[in-house]
Image (cartoon, rainbow, N blue to C red; front, top):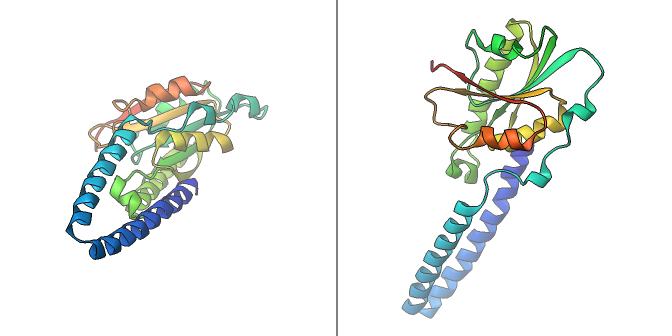
Length: 214
């Protein structure tokens, strides 16, 4: 999966930083107390620089990396294709009806992507709990859609919902993108601007479905 590859690549700078810190500490142990003071000042400055950099950088991929128009590669059939980006298990009885609302009676095919959303510490330590939760959300959502007569398949995706959407559109020519959130959860894609970003980024309709809290 693309998200797993990204996590593996993140380990490279971590290892490099650990090696550099080890070399600096070894040098400082020989040089004396002033070296430790300089290292402390330099480390504090590096933390400030990194904090400013990440606060200003966009959490989403650049607009230039957006996938091509999915409508241009759609098969000539009467199937309504929906890309569902779900941050929770979508088992609410009204969920399939909301998915079908824009299909105009056509057969519905859905690709469900459950982003593996975890903390920054979990990503740095390669904690798999986010992927376990995402797989649970995915399986339950696909099962719920299948019981409602909607052909559905799915996969876990990148922790960034926009990146997950980009990846999904590269393999699935959707007619519509549906972001599904659940009231009261810690992930609020509306407040974080994910829905607005997607609406401006993609040429197909973007819908937000807010399911009631369990």
